[in-house]
Image (cartoon, rainbow, N blue to C red; front, side, top):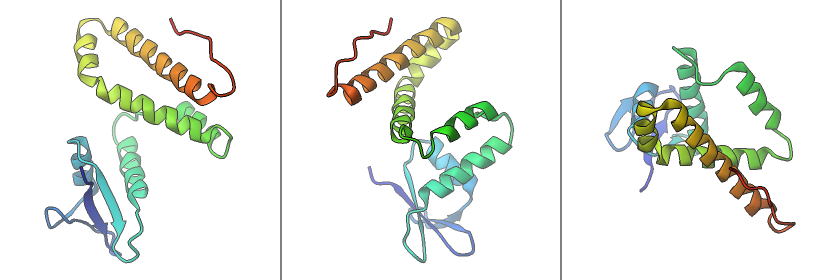
Length: 149
């Protein structure tokens, strides 16, 4: 599936090339929430500025209502920048979110019945994902023998 192309013009306006209309950040957020993959390019340079726009959407969401990221969590994330584990941490977060997203319906069903069991199950699956990722990353140097229970 090709990404939904949006162009950002110098006047800061966003133009949705598929619907041929200007859109707001809120509308881009709605596209993403509905499952679309978006790509935002600078109309003058052709530079991919998707990350910048996505971070702007996150900043607005964090400023309004109940934030998803606590200060402590953000500080922990910041500590990984520039470190030797930055790439590993980014890959772990990405894989964890993909895993969580793939099982969101299962999670919703379980959470409605028994929240603690659902959260425990997801935590266990996440630990297995992390363990498997470590094993594949460090497997060449030696086997990871720890099993997540």
